[in-house]
Image (cartoon, rainbow, N blue to C red; front, side):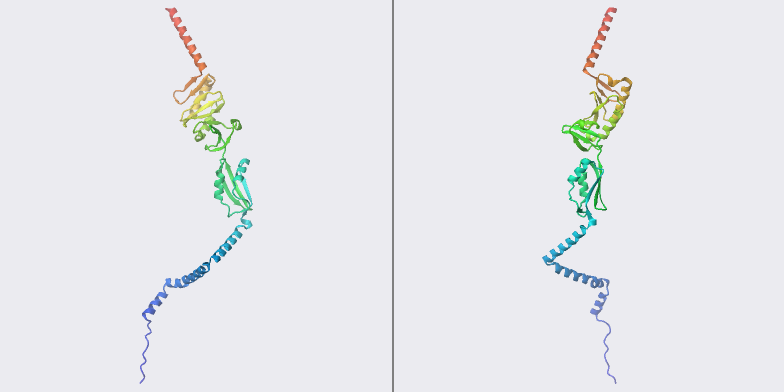
Length: 297
């Protein structure tokens, strides 16, 4: 009779079963495939960089590699090109340019350079770009002077927006520009230019415009006569003065001001000489009437 040999149970133990199931999960497999290698690399790198000398040496090597890349010929800027700028503006830009050329394009802060250039009073806009061949091209749009603004501090040159571009010592330095005076004149330059454009139809030369109360204009003629314009529609009021002048030669008369602030009732102010003569004629006419009346009686 053969002896009975006990057979081992092929089923895994409970612990082994759980470990096998855990080993087959995606997270466990990613941990051993990626996590452990990364932890080992991080540990080795941390151990290597724990020394201050090694860290400093590594930083110097990285800086040297970066410097070699940034200073390659294809990344160097050798020339500053200014397009659309006058000679005076070019001198101002060269004077404030903060870099010594040649310089690496990585060292140039283009937004800061643009803001610095646009801070110049004579410049309205600046566009910067680096061209091939190491050229920093700057396209300049200058402000266009349209009028002079006389203040107590001096005479400023204004553009269409009222920005002060420059200053002049005397009116004769810019005889091609009209003169504006008065507080707030710089904030109404477009309206002033419209008035001056309409005033070209006058037979009298214009001396300038005076801003009154920061809300309306007085047109001053070369002979000292003034046309007081309203706050609303000043050009239309001036056109009425032009029509009256062409019809009756009003500006040729001995007047001081023509008040157009009330459109329905234009008012003129005579000079002292004209006023005295008018009163003289009025009194003389009145005395003649009285004498005639007495004789009739």
